[in-house]
Image (cartoon, rainbow, N blue to C red):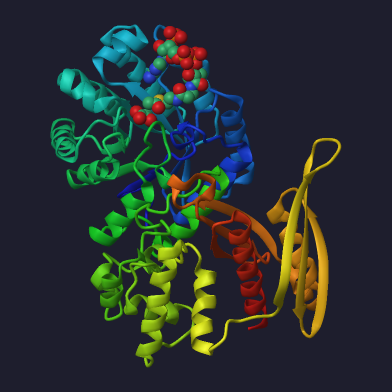
Length: 526
Ligand SMILES: CC(=O)SCCNC(=O)CCNC(=O)[C@H](O)C(C)(C)COP(=O)(O)OP(=O)(O)OC[C@H]1O[C@@H](n2cnc3c(N)ncnc32)[C@H](O)[C@@H]1OP(=O)(O)O
Ligand SMILES: CC(=O)C(=O)O
């Protein structure tokens, strides 16, 4: 497939995405993300603005040596020449020319008010800035795209001038004029009307760049494509200024799966979930679980009635097969579960419960009763699996019997508070009495418990508590409230979450800790 031909998928995660509050990418991060984007098969990767800051300049220098892109071309982003300067003499234009990128995307003003107020120049000089800069870069052998900044607002205020900017760029040799909804205020119908008019009036190849301030960035992008745009810009996970840009994965998934337009190389859309999550690791921005297509909740089903229909056919409650974007269907167990939810969840965990209605009814009732007391199983799959195993196998999986535990916290002479726990238990016929220290009571209990069990099961040494969350359930009761604790434990290869509930935060933590170790041992021994 000709990625740079019939239809352009243009990613600006490394430039507009990096303009998101709280997102700060090193050069190594940018190189890493560029490789991921190439793996998704986008046609263009906008790497940043060379010359604007040392990091972006360095990115383009290293990209030449280190990036071996299979699908994408690298694009350098920057502004047209400044007013009153020759394009060849403008240092920022020179940085674009010398960046090594074969494509340059020039941002240009297309709204007359911006020309007069922000650039503080004449409308004629702005046209000359566009013409000269495009011509200069074309003469240097680069492909040029034009990002017409504030195009839609400019079109409303002064249609003739906004269109003149596009014509000027196209006549000077720009391959694409991308209409930018810079302030993100548009709605799909409006975008559609403007794109139709631009194509009819200018005949230029039109691209679209939408921000999400009305929550319509993806819809606006699709409306533009429907009206004839053949170049879409967006970012992974919708990163970007303010409320972000169009989420490029949602855009391409909609184009391929709903509108039957192949815009990525065959088969690569299936990498979307993996890549969206891998990039979130690099940006260190937690992925939104409800993100369309690739979110962990995108195909998660909680309501009992949904599960009962899904049991017959998953498509009854799904708009598409999650496999097409590399995602998975998940069944959530909670007080909204019915028997079908439990049966399907059991299947997911390797238990065929279809022949035992009574057991399924019992588990459903237990889940509802425990959730009423404060437990939550949708967030604690491992505790649910232990409950299910107990019902199926007739006894709770157990590798040790707790005799007693206690924990004290005291201040040392230097004022530091430390905790000490003692745990007494029996495992494999041996009695263990072990103390553990920690910077808090849960830390001390965890240390003592693992030390004791580790003597009978050395594999416990690999287990590590990686997350600990406390939630007060009945907030009206202050320190007397019921507490829920969620603990995530890892064995270095995978992790699992367990839940404990109690009036006492230590008691709740203890329940989650014991479940966490029990689940880990069970998984190891199975
Ligand atoms: C819509 C978008 O998201 S476009 C991308 C925006 N991204 C960024 O701004 C990030 C990178 N930017 C930067 O590092 C800096 O702003 C720079 C290097 C580009 C410019 O820095 P400075 O020269 O210090 O100026 P400053 O940031 O205040 O910008 C104002 C200048 O840019 C000029 N300018 C603004 N827009 C444009 C444009 N589209 N074309 C040409 N010049 C422009 C203004 O006329 C003004 O010039 P002047 O100083 O000669 O009056
Ligand atoms: C160019 C760009 O990022 C915008 O106008 O939003």
